[in-house]
Length: 397
Image (cartoon, rainbow, N blue to C red):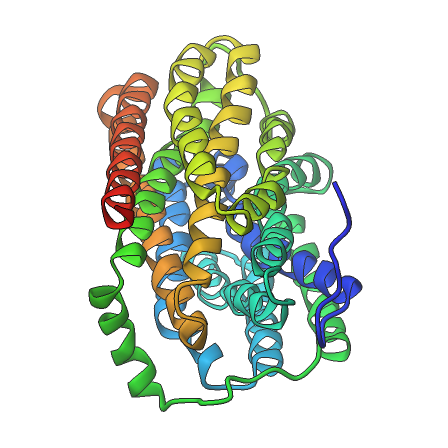
């Protein structure tokens, strides 16, 4: 994989720093997934109560995308990103010091809401990229974000086994603070040349959704894909710890390393968009998403199949997300931050819905219920992808 090229006002080292920051921000919302059993035991609550933190993190993130990320089209982006990242670090610290479940959930809410610093940095990378290189820039920064999400589960499991689950959040708060200050020093000032008022920014997002069919279609497909994956993310620790495999936090976290292979396609997916081959990447993603669930169902009792399913499902999700996100960033450059916010709000709303429905499916029929729901959502995402491609062909004709 070639190194990222520099852009006006944004060198390769700054691009990689942005990728690191995005990974820390987004990954922090996934620490709880392999730790649900330990968190429930620590606070002496039911596992389903601890699992509510997964949904809460994603709902908070979606709210941040809707209310805070659009400020990237109004405010100075560097200052906004750094401020949000410092507030997210404060939320992580609260999680690590919480004495009861309510305080832990409050910290989860704060960390999720303000971790949208990552979604200020992604369109910033696209805005500063050289002409014809925005897909590649988005791919590199998103690679960091996705690796953060995928590796967060593994790091959390290993740290929890060694120092306890609270050390995961305490360490994250410290590292995020250091990186935020580093961002302030390294990044150039960047601002929309035609900033609008905050009410105008929020109001225009609905207009963008109504007027841009490509934005609607790609947001829906990615939301369904992430909902399918979130069914897995919200239930895998429950199955792997209590099922026939009987894994501990560290072992469950290490399984997340298998999914890191999916993040490696991010840069390549961005390049496909730059070359006009985004349809191919979407088709690969939809197929991989669908094929992963039979592997995961069988993997509930056979670790090898579960690991393979993790690789395939993460690969499928990232193909769809990177392709759709890079395409959306090119539709209206002057409204890139708002377009990105609309897309990502829908994306994480799908994740929150998938987590909530996944927990419900688990209560009703355990792992089989979760897998059945995951398949249904994957099929819907595939149908949406096919419909999107068909519509594009008709428009081209």
